[in-house]
Amino acid sequence: MSNELPCFDVLPQHIAVIMDGNGRWAKQRGLERTEGHKAGAENFRRIVDYASRLGIKYMTFYAFSTENWKRPEFEVKTIMNLIRKYLKEMQLREAENEASGYNIHFIGNREGLDDDIVKLFNTVEKRSSKHNKTYVNIAVNYGGREEITHSVRVLCEKVKNGELISSDITENTVASYLYTAGQPDPDLIIRPSGEQRLSNFLIWQAAYSEFWYSDVLWPDFNEQELNRALEDYAHRHRRFGGI
Ligand code: IPE
Ligand code: IPE
Ligand code: MG
Image 1 (cartoon, rainbow, N blue to C red):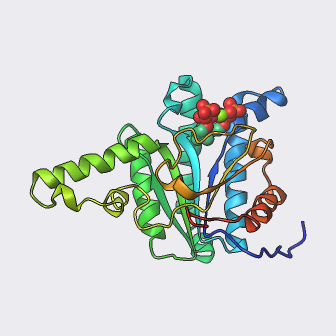
Image 2 (cartoon, rainbow, N blue to C red):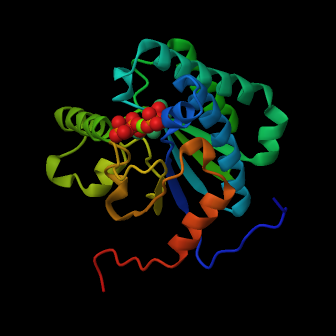
Image 3 (cartoon, helix red, strand yellow):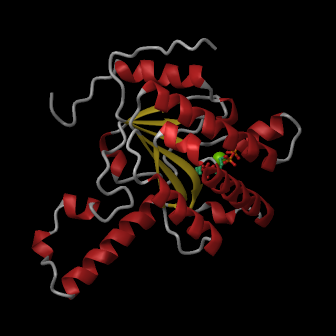
């Protein structure tokens, strides 16, 4: 690929990606599903780098859902180990991170995750918090319904303690206790692998997102595929209920 970057008429401020199709990618090659997750993790790095070079300011990647615990123990363990490996590498590549300017944030319920992973989340978030070139959310043990439930629970506590009265609760109040508080909603949600559903991803934030689906499996979702999605997005007419 040449170093020249394409230019789009309109670039989304926030893209969200459902990294789906790892298992099928491996199966097509006669490999174990876990090999697909390894290839998917590599591709995640590649696409983050590329999208950042294009100038996309916010990105959210769905890595593990609250429903993915239903999978065989070995598969869950492999995915968690890949997350661990990525986090440890992030710690080692301080200089590189400095240059790329990624501000990394983990969204999802941290209860239920191994303590060492939660610790690594905290370290990586803390170290990258001074950067503001590209904001990267990684969704681990994330479920949109869990996220909204969590926000509601926090608000109920506040009402109970007298910090808030229920009639003061607005959409913004609810949003301010979501894991994505303070960030713009995704403009474009991309799902490879042929599935056309949200699978509990950003269900609150997706209210007015544009969708883009592709049959390509996530490990094969390359720069050209992202360009196709962005090119398509640039010609969408977003109305937000208006005319
Ligand atoms: C996405 O790929 C990764 C996770 C859900 C963790 P899949 O593992 O769902 O791949 P398919 O959908 O079975 O091909
Ligand atoms: C969504 O993919 C979750 C992630 C990509 C992390 P799934 O493979 O879990 O979704 P379903 O089960 O096909 O809806
Ligand atoms: Mg899947």
